[in-house]
Amino acid sequence: MNATALYKQPDIFDLYDGGGIDLLCLGAAHVDPQGNVNVSKFAGRVVGPGGWEIAGGRLNILEDGDGIKFVKQLEQVTFSGEYAHETGQEVLYITERAVLKVTKNGLPIIEIAPGVFERKSRGATSKSPGDVSS
Image (cartoon, rainbow, N blue to C red; front, side, top):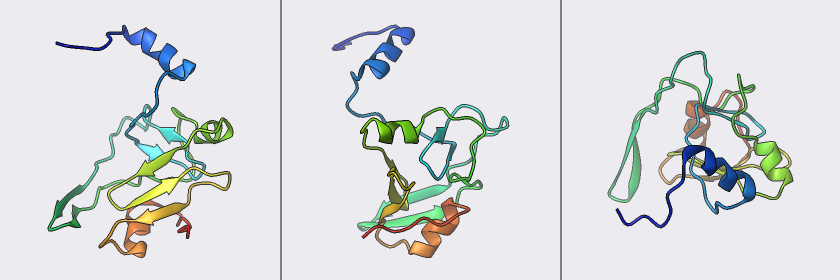
């Protein structure tokens, strides 16, 4: 192994808190309208991701996931989108259907994947529609 650095698990949190990470990719069980994320507690159930592929330069959604990812209220906040926005961090949520951005006004959709209708994009991932930014 030619690692640049090796850290013990507890030491990783010093990197998070100290601003030592430029980019973080995190999966989400649930996201609320303010961009807060729950990845750690959701009634003992993992929500399925569905299925998709990119073929011929187009996105093809093969199967919708069986759960709602974007919800009005989280059971637990693992990551605070509100705090991230307050501290000037750019936070994007990138799904197979759309890109959403944490703003002072919530979580608007800023881009919709080619080949995915806006209505389908909202209906499959959210209980409440977002606004598409221009």
